[in-house]
Amino acid sequence: MLAALTLAASIAVPTRLKLEAWTGANVATATSAARKYRLHVAGPANAKLVLRASGLAPGWLAAFCTPSYCAPMRVDVTLPATGEAVFQFELIREDAAAPARTAARITSDDGASVSVTR
Image 1 (cartoon, helix red, strand yellow):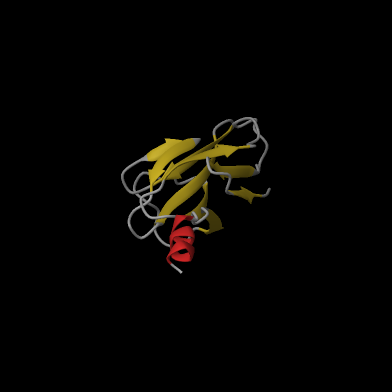
Image 2 (tube, helix red, strand yellow):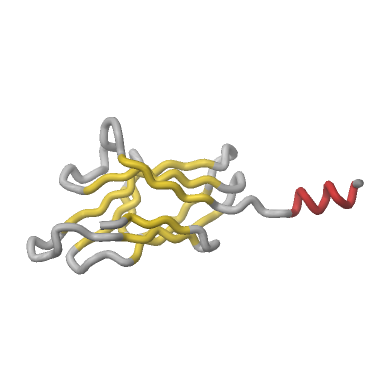
């Protein structure tokens, strides 16, 4: 019985990424003209993760924003004891010649991913 409990405790909780429409007030560091999403990250308490954005059309930039900073294209995250963190994820059109919309993929360094479609 003790061996089964030890084995269960050693199995890692997978990281989960979820995107929803952003509602409510923007964080102070956000860009007003961006497409905005709520990125919910869940995983083991105190886990250290790297989140990266990829697959954007030329002329677009992705940002992971909190009330104190926005990180372009990637962010290093240490999940709190709750195992959950929330970002305002933004897609920012930086070039007037860029396509009107873009897709994006957010991937964690442990393999979890979620996509924004055009």
